[in-house]
Length: 235
Image (tube, rainbow, N blue to C red; front, top):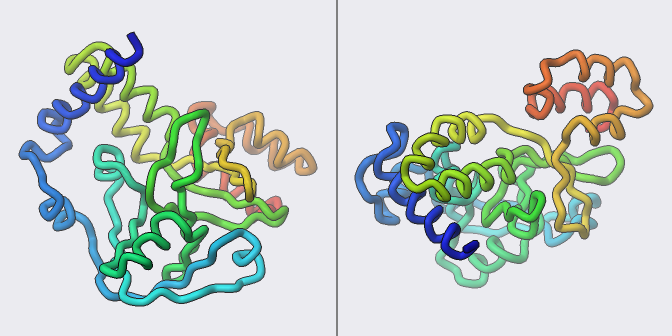
């Protein structure tokens, strides 16, 4: 039954790509997709292979790297994260996809999301914005991976009608960043929800009170969480 539901979800999502009003109605091949992405070719980027190198500021350089950024809708339907890096050099390509822990692109820290999962749902290949925390953890900002996966599955279970019914709500989820705490060496990403915020702000009761005064449905939003963590000196 699970296999049938998964197949139905995949079919429904494919049909949704061709019918939802905010998704292009024609089938796209890879070259067409890249045209709709923002591509900056032949740049040099700095990378590190683990959290220890990141903490020590030990960066290596990779040259002639193609940087591809995506809109949130493109991430939602085609996969991948805020940034994707590519190269004609096979060794560099493998490095960027699998081996690099983090990349510094300009002044933006980007974490390789390939290893991580949110409640069993994989983040997938790509890079997303990250911030170093004062306690040695990393704070990752991205869409709510588990929520998006759940919506896609539920919509698929009820065929194309179900997929269309959840499309607008899914788009809203995809447009809003949440925060994840990453523990170096642990592949489980912890979403910053009310329970985790209570732990993070345990020694900052006024900030915790400020957080709890926010409308409940907005408490997951990165725009709510990050300013409070900065005030607490955690970022």
